[in-house]
Image (tube, rainbow, N blue to C red; front, side, top):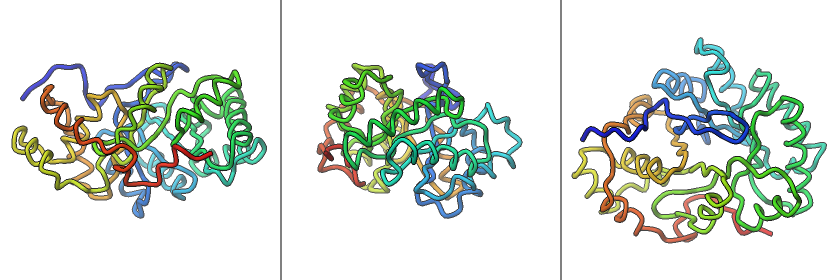
Length: 279
């Protein structure tokens, strides 16, 4: 079914900093062929790569970018600092480490990877990222795995609202209260694990696969896009890397969306660590 809803592989969303982030990202968590996978992703049309310091593959992402022939400004790079580096000075150092590993002069989006280690260190870490942004090392600052409590801490401290909250989101784990808070405060939701780590054998998916003649991954990614999220699928298989971009010549109707929305299990549906409730 042909559609004209304005969404294409090149679609972006404008963040408060004026940075246009591609709506579809390529995740590299637990990717052990990162250079080859990211190179294939660039060939498939991805222009948004989501890495993290703890993934230990920032250097491979940077190498793939340089080998691609793409201009630096054509590609959006995201990385994250894990809680063991929380604190002002350690976070400032972590930003410089990521810049060196990627081999770039700036990072488009830098996130606090998780909210562990307490409020004081979270705020210090966030201040360090904001200062790195002012220094031109980062274009946009955000968070990951933050619940409402953690987001409220930032607001109460009088600090700039995070541009992004990257959380686990898919039909089984919809994180509705956090998503509602983010929408109310203009925070973009990036959806990691949008393909439910391959748990694709649910009858609802089979029903939509038959209806739309699409594979389950395409159905799930289309759901994510239509919900207004920025999904971050990952794969090391070239055919799958390409097929995960074929999302723009069909759409899910209201009945389809309601079918998938009804699968929500709340936090019980998470397939990752999902530390949104930590103190």
